Length: 235
Image 1 (tube, one colour):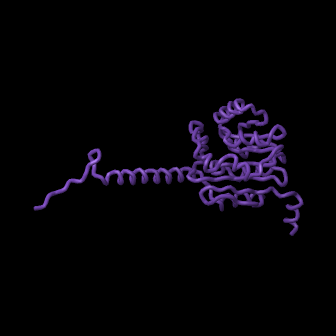
Image 2: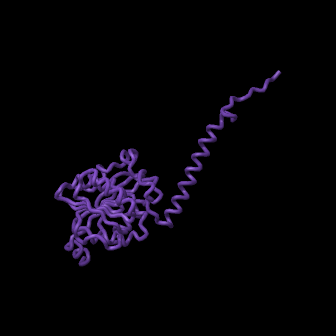
Image 3: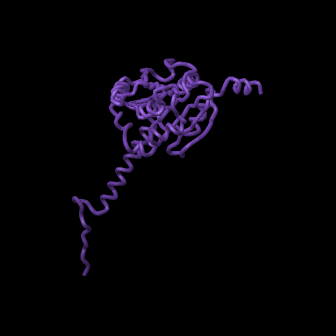
């Protein structure tokens, strides 16, 4: 005589239901990621102010901390640093401490809400060497031949005109100055190494070095000196 053995139930579902639920959640997340990626490809929308708290989280700091990014860019005392798409200051604030009283950080962002929060944080930290600029990258609102370092951290894919922005950054750096570009998955605006190099080298930057891997990386580019540019043209 055979007996039907009932499978254990969990909340009215079979034991396989948690596995199905996990699979469903994973599928939804993957689909959402693909949708965000497609939207980001055609709509260059910066991270909204109401998500600014996400930018200041321990996970991001552990994966790619501000101190590590500043070391990769070679930021030191007395330097002038341009932080493009600064947000609420995850890079700008430690950069201000790093360059010291003899240096300066210019924090540029198109969103006034981000800059208001950054100014409050600057005051809280007692820093007097950080200047905020409310403008879009590439709009001609930064000095020429002025900065030693420029940083783009998870911002390049948000720019509607990346070539214009990179051209402005190129002009803003002194000869020998460095542009440091960092990209990290799962940012929907993530840019590949190849695309970053094509864009940067397309406006005249010279590739210098690379850090990290395909998921989280930093590429550094140097602005050549006039003599190097002349030598390149003449050859």
